[in-house]
Length: 304
Image 1 (spheres, helix red, strand yellow):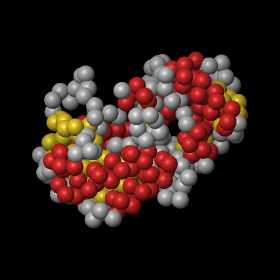
Image 2 (cartoon, rainbow, N blue to C red):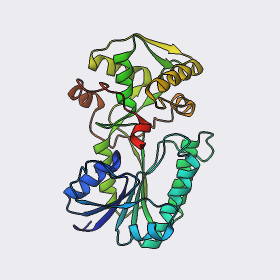
Image 3 (cartoon, rainbow, N blue to C red):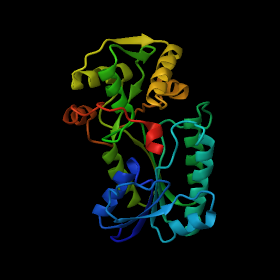
């Protein structure tokens, strides 16, 4: 990868996109983001050019990608909502890929999910599989990264587990809590993305961290690290979802969805593969124990 090449990152003012953009800047590249957000405070102090994420305007989307060597795509939606839906995210991303090819983008680094399947009844995993196929069939060079759960300063899942441990006298897990997760540090994912942006071979990589937890172990470990040793009880998925829906209404957010519970319990956030990230969640959490979960992290708030 040559210095001063133009690289385009979707959502560089968001979560994982911000870390990818920062690493590209550190390597001396020009960085452009296509984004729906206009930050109050620019984390890059004007170093990242920004264009609107105009899925409904093909020519504008092509123009935003023209001249780029690599596109890093982090765009997606976590769940269906009145303002965004999985099926729309799939259609929008296919438009993005088509625009990238027309613009002459040489390579696409695309963030997917572990265990995607077009046969899945879960829209998240089904949609991610459809997009992987669309990228493979596009004719562009690609790297597909399949992370499980991300953690870092702006994380939602790990933070809100800690928040629940701080706020509630008892914490429930869905079923026996034996289903597994392999969290990867967001900057480790960014490092992997930039490394793959510099490569040429098309490949698919499971982007997982060095530690594997059962969900019950994860909750207990976080509780121990932040000094909140709460009783952990098993609840049925339906009862757990109902309790989480009440929490969601209280905080004005979607705490977790039925599909997310089903995906967790189906062990879809686990793969039998060597880790690609080196940062241990336990080490990171200890460094941030004082602030981890101190405030609720809102998915809808982030999108607003």
